[in-house]
Each structure stands twice: as C-alpha cells, then as structure tokens.
Length: 208
Length: 208
Image (cartoon, rainbow over all chains, first blue to last red; front, side, top):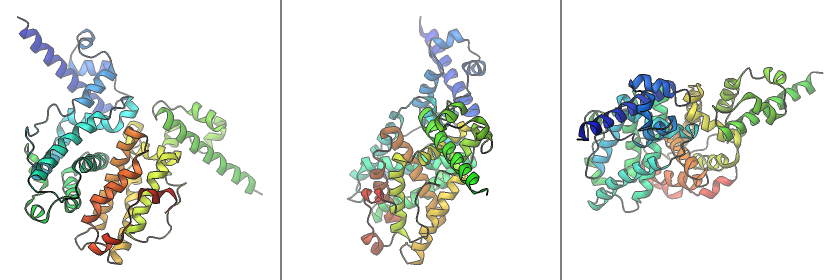
C-alpha cells in the first residue's frame, strides 16, 4: 500500500539533491537560494520540508552523498583497481553534477559552515581497502603504511582536482591524475608491480 | 618631503591587508564586511579608498600577496632547500594570518568570485626553480619533468593543508608534509640524494 508513495518520496528527494547540486555548482553555495533549488526541481517548499529543513541540510546531503551515484567496485582488488578508480572519478567530475558539487562543497565547506571531515575519511577508507588488498598480494613496498598513504592520495587528489577545476573545469584532470600516479607509484609499489601497472587516462572513461 | 607621507601610506595599506586577512580568517570571506575590516584596522573608509576600492580588491590583494611577509630563500639551492621551504610554510600557516588567509582564499576563491590561477602558478615557478637547481646538480632521476612535478607538489601541498586546516587548524600539517615527502621523493630523487636528504618536521620552525 505504501510502496508507490515511498517510491515517489525517493524520487522527490533525489530530484531535490540533484537540483541543489546544480544550483550550488552554477551559483556557488553562498548565492544559492532554496527558491532557486525548488524552481529547478519543480517541487514545492512543503514537499521539500519532508526531506530537508534548510539550505544547510541540502548542502550537507550533497557533501555526504557525493558518491551515491557513482559506480564504484564492490570488492577491493589492489593497486590497478585503485588507479582505475581515481581515473574514473576524474572523468565523473567532468559531468556528474552531484559528485562535482559535493567535492566542491568538501573543499569550500568552511564557507558553507559545514566543517565535516567524514567525507575525506570515507575516501581514505575506500582507498585504504584497495591498498590493503594490494599489500596482501605483495604489491607494496615493505615501508608503506596504507593508512598514511591513503591520506596522501586523498590529499593530493583533492588539490589536483581543485587546480584543474580552476584552470580547465576538470578537462585536463584525467591527465593530471595519471601524472600524479607516475610520481607516487615508485614510493609504494614493488618494481615487479610497477612494471605491470597501467596508468592510462582513457581507462577512466568506463566504470572501473 | 613626501617621504613621511609615503611611509604612512605603506603602513596604512599593510594594516588594511592584515585586518582583511584576520577578518576573512575569522568570519569567512562571504560574511566579512568592509566595516569590520575598517574597525579592525582603525582606518577610515576615505583612507581605505586610496588603496582598495572594495572588499573584492582586498580579497584579491590578500590572495596575491599571501607570500609577501614570508622569509623565502633568495636563491634556488635544490631539493633540500625545497623540502625545508615546504616545512617552513607548514609552520607559517599555523600563525602567519596573511599567508593562511591568502591560501584559504586561493582554495575557496570561486566563492569569492576571484578565479585567479596565477597564485598557483607563482608557487609552481618557485618550486620548479629549486627542482631545476637540484637537477643541475644531479639530484633528480632522469625521467623527472620539473614543471610537471612542481605542479604535483603544489597540488598535493594544497590538498594536504586543506585537510589539515579542517581537521586540526594546521597543527598536524608539518608532520603530514613530511609524510607526503616520504612518498614523493622515491619518484624524483636519485638513490644517493635520497640517502642524504633530511625530512624533519621540526626544521620548518626557523626560516629555510
């Protein structure tokens, strides 16, 4: 009985999330207004309040659910999958508006008054799972601390996307992520692993 | 004859720049107002207009002159000096308000409507000069492209400081910059260079 209503509620929430992401992306968070978001989503304020109480609520949802429409691998598989994932993310940043707006809010969140580190922790955990899997298969040099390197990777990825957004709206991001890997891999991968890993910006065009 | 007036104008401009940096740091750029900045600087609006026409002018000056109160080495000297400089910057971010506010504006500048890539280019040029000097002294592996790696370093530094600001107000930044180097150096330095480089977070406490 409640099923159709529930499905509609899910669709309404998703429409609001996407409209908020679009408006944040277009106007920036401070200039984005709830009325712009409602107009974009074609949803009334009453229907919104069931899901989100304020612009801050929408901002937090875009920030924390940035990865919810990505197709990420379900099971860790090691370094090659980690490389492929980062290149896939570089391509998604070019056209996946929820991901792009969420990443922008993560970087500029002090202006949005959100102050949430958990989204960085989530990416660190995901990257670390791939690194631990690679480590279990002998891909990593003995001195690598997977938690430490996962943080280095999230940090360097964040800075790389931020500069690429400013300079080229992420057009050159896949190339810059490939360059980043060329300098990071010698510090973490065994020579045998290094010889077989493929770092090709084009691999990111399809989900890893 | 004009000397005392000129000296006063320089002091007024500097006081405005520092007050703007403090207010941007404290309230965020969007919430910062010219009246707050004037009150902080103890300067009248008329005196300000001689130097800056608007909040945007002040924002651009804080962004572009972020390094003006740092003590940076005058002559490139190679990898050790580059490492020491990045650690010195990590300590300066903890208490140099003009540098800290300028770096924050660089990261969040789309919200401030500035859209200026030149500040990243300036850091890339400075880092590259050290790398080129290191290369001239045989410190770098043959495959290193100094322009490319200078960009990787600026990007990974930017992301590292951004996460450290959010998590610990830069308290743990020197340590995280040292960790970053431990993963970057094997990809750029010859084994002999690697063996003699010192990456010590404490070295940054005094100017490089």
